Image (cartoon, rainbow, N blue to C red; front, top):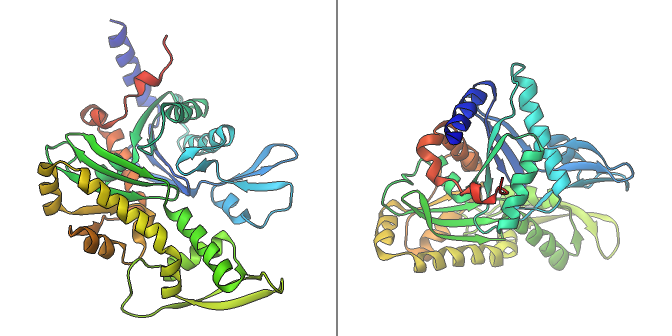
Length: 357
């Protein structure tokens, strides 16, 4: 009887609330609103005044401040490698997203239900931290979905059927690799090497090779501009500016795609090796399905030139980048939100994380 009343109450409340799905990423956060699609896509950055503890800016405005702030203002990322590192700042960021949606729909009177993406390798404590931060930010009910599952749904793979689906989601903080069948993860791996680590590789390479100190934004621009995992048909070159560590003066040098490939080689190899390990652990029947369907790449890191070619060469399995890989997790979580009754089985069992009543 109590469950029936709760369900009826939830249905009534959901009519007056704007339920949302959030891809809470290390580098970027995307928010999907039921019935409207993705309405927010902003960097996961918060600028804080350390003297007062006040949040000055969140998202795009905060990212502009990275590396350009006075000593008392710090532009920080509240998530490190897919996991909440600063609970209060994450709560502020989630509150900002929820409030932004509330303002855009003045009739909203109830708190929203929220589906939130998490890496598949997180602990129960880390799951609880995500739930608590989201509830404190104003959510009525919180559902968790593993990022590779959301990415696979966003790629419209038949995750609920009895067949193997292989997804590799390369985000900012983590690379999520999973084999999915019958609405569950048969095998899942979470590697703390992804887009941010590739940026750090370029920073380290510039210091070691050219004695040049460059910032994170410069490293990311170079990665996007000429970065690759496999030799390109045409050679590319790009200027890179920084401070010479010997003279202390500003300097500009030219780097080639071959230089950057060398810088990224070790991290790229670790991602490819993890994909191969996952293939080795996959049951033969599911592997037969994967060989015909191929490996699907999602997340911003999948856009590294030639990565799909390298994985195909190393695994002997066709590899393709899914449509619009940057928004796959948010779209997948949004599709679950739109069809919660049919797709509830793909969610992490959040009930066990709730404290006993």
